[in-house]
View (tube, rainbow, N blue to C red):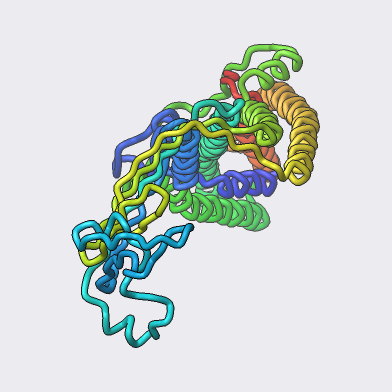
Length: 478
C-alpha cells in the first residue's frame, strides 16, 4: 500500500511539482502560480504571437479596399535623334511638287529621322549623347468586387478567433499542470509529516525495547528489536524516496512557469484538504463544456473560416469593377518630337488618364473546381467538429466519474484513517506499559500509516479530478 502511495507521488512529480522549503522564499498561492505560468510559459506566449500574426492577415484583408498600384521609373542613354522634313523632290498624289518646309517647321512635317534601321549597332553606340528618363504610374481603386473582400475578411477573423481559443486551451493545459503541481507539493509535505510522525513512534518503541533488553525485564525479545529495525529501515527508505522525487520536481516547476519563475519557489502553507465540489449531474458539465471549453469554440470558428473560404472561392468567379488612373512622364532632351497626335513618341511625353474598368475572369473551370473543393473541406471540418464534440463529451463523463469516485473514496478512507489512528494510539499506550506485543504495535503502525497515505493520495486525486473536470468543461468546478 505504501508503495502505491510512492507511485502516486511519482505521478505528481511527472506533473511537475516542487517541494516547499519553509523560510527560504516567498510562498505562492495556486492563483499566483497560475498567473506566473500564464505570463512566462513559452507555449502560452507562442500561441499569443501566432494569434497576433493572424490578426495581421485580417488587416491585410481589410486593406484590399484601399487603392493599389505601382510606379516604374528608369533612366538610360539615348542618341541625338533629329527630325527630317520632306525631300525637295517630293510630290503629292497628283504628281505636283510639294513646297519644302522651313527648318523651323521640320518637327511639324517630320517624315524621317537622322537615325534609320540601316545604321549598324556600332554607329548607334557612338551616337549616344543624351539621357532618357521615364516614369509610369498606375493606381487601381476597387469599386465593387461582389463580396470577395468581405469573405476574405470573415475567413481571417474566424481564423484569429480560432487561434485565440487554441491559445486559451494551451493556457488551460498549463493551468491544469500547475494545479497538479500545487497539490503535489502539499501531498509530499503531508506524507513527509506522516513519515516523521511514524519515526517518532518507532523511536519510542525502539527505546523501550532496548531498555527492556538491557535490564532483562519485560517480554521484549531480540526478534522484536529486529522487527522494529526492519520497519524503521523501510520507513527511512520511503522518506528518502519521497524527498528525492520532490527535489527532482522542483526544477520541473520552474520550467513550467517559464521566465516568470522565481529563483526560490515554494507554495503556501495552507492545509492539504479536499476541495468542496457541488453535487451536479454529468449533463450539467456536458452543457458547460459546449458553452465554455476553448476547443469547442475553436472548432466553431474553424468551421466558420472554412465556410468563408468556400464563399470566397465561389465569388472569385464574378467580375471586378475598379477605377484605374494612369500617368506618364518621359523626357529625352536630345530627341526631337514630331508634332503629330497620331504618333506615339515614348521619349518625350506627359499624359494622364482615368477610366472605369471591368475585369471578368475567363478561367472558370479551375475556379469552379476550387470552389467545389473548398465546400467539401468546409463540410469535412463540420463533421470533424461533431466527431470532436463526441470525444469531449466522453472526456467530461470520464472526469466526472473520476471526481465522483475520488470524493466517495476520500470519505471512506478518512473513516479508516481515524480508526487506524485510534488503533495505533491504543496499542502504543498498551505497549508502553508492557501489555502489548511488538507485533501488535508494528501491525497497528503499518496499518495506520497505510490508511493515512491512502487518505492523502485520495485527497490529491480528488483535487486533481476537480481540476481535470474544470479543464474538460472550460469552467471552474469547485
